Amino acid sequence: MPSELLFREDAYLREAQGKVLGHTDEGGILLDRCLFYATAGGQPGDSGWLSWGDIRLPVATAVKAEGGLVALVPAEPAELPPPGTEVLQVLDWERRHAHMRVHTALHLLSVVIPLPVTGGQIGAGRGRLDFDMPEPPDDVLALEARVNALVDLDLPVTDTWISDEELAANPGLVKTMSVMPPTGQGKVRLVRIGTPDKQVDLQPCGGTHVARTGEIGRVEIGKIEKKGRINRRVTLTLI
Image (tube, rainbow, N blue to C red; front, side, top):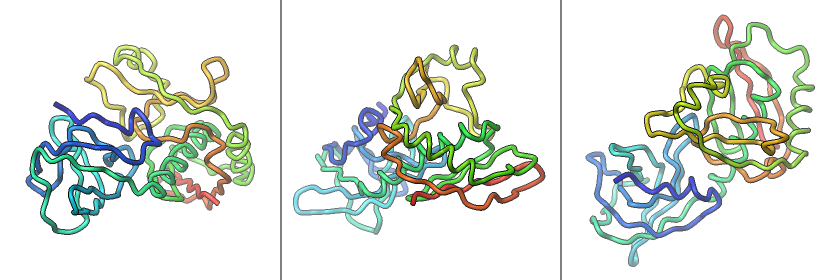
């Protein structure tokens, strides 16, 4: 059975119990219910720690494993909890929350720069999107002001689900050229900024986001770099 993805149900959950199902060959810990986001879509895996009894094990990151499971990677060599052990999962919340703020800000960036996205990366306090952008924008400060104006609207950020068939019938929902949303499970998660009747953005996404854009805070857009013949990189920083 795949891991129950607790971060998908509540991105603000900071602690949760879980039971160890086993270990990967590389020493990752497999849980039945997982609080940690697994590296995907340009968003790093979460860090934090596990505890059981009087043992506290730092977790460096989380990665996807076979069968829909998530493997927690210890930060240092240590004795692993045996299968069947009940453990307490605790997030490095400050890092996770920074990822959430940056991720939602990058969705807003894709609104003010309505061009195909060729790549992206999320960090704790900074992120970037690469665009199919033959010519640089005339006014970077105007783009920055437009992103911050959307932040200031304090728009709700919610998710909804559609079928694989509905996504195939609406290819315009997909902004990314390099990474396609996962299909084959029967449904695809969409992240909406705004409300259904006053929608700013709607696109497939499996990552974690803040509940409202106002939580992002102020952002700054740095120098736009040329990355290839038509690709340009736009970096966004929380300030």
